[in-house]
Image (cartoon, rainbow, N blue to C red; front, top):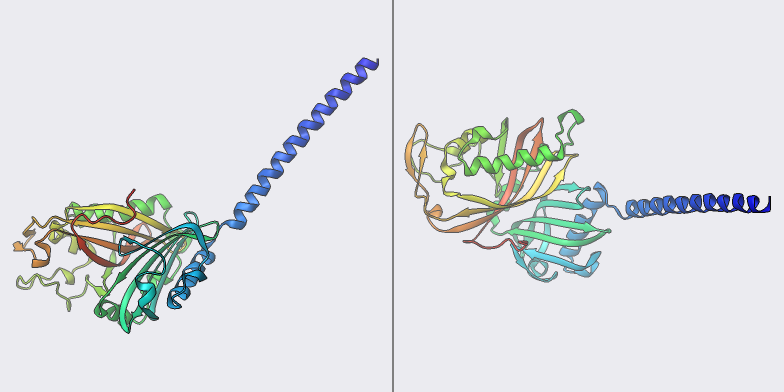
Length: 330
């Protein structure tokens, strides 16, 4: 009898011990999840880091930032120390600001105007936030007053960048990336028809609307031919971008599901060997002199994806020597 009771007690102790271990593991998982949630950075948190960065930048004081131990910083593709370059020359913020954030990836982006030693410029920022600290800072400063002044003449960003999408207008993250990538496929394959453009799509680069804008001419100098007067699809179908032989790498950094925005950095490769464009219905026309040389262009660009189509495109361009690395190449 005593042996039987001891066996029962042992089994009970084993069951109780197993229960305690299971409960402990569940509690540990719950605590870990709560800890991760506490460290996670939501939409407001991420855009708040942009404001923190801008405030520290204008104050010329990177010590104001919550930084990871090994933070990486580039300006115009060049790795450097926080506190260098624009950190010493910025004077004030301008009047134009656009934010986009991706809580799932911990990434946040910004485009805005600034004053650098009194001269207007455009600033693009990407931050990667880990455990509520800034781990990566990637910036492009588009210097020269004209692009920034042109951007500020719009008064405010296009409403497309400021209005969240209704649930029925949204696409999945995977589809948003696929649609945006198709834009670059259309460029290198000289086909706007393969890109899901909204009929009302417009593009602004360096402060200039270069679609549906007959008052702007990019200097093609061929009679009445003006691709800037065309819509996004028709503009790409002209094949004038034949001198762009590759867009590589394509770094998609922010997928803002709330706003329907994809933002990233894209390296356009121009070998300088394509001397003319064979424009349908027009014939062969010479490339502008700027395209007849080897060079790269880093483009910080963002896209509004609405109802599965590209509704708006905006960005800034940075001309670089041919084959210049991004500063973030693996």
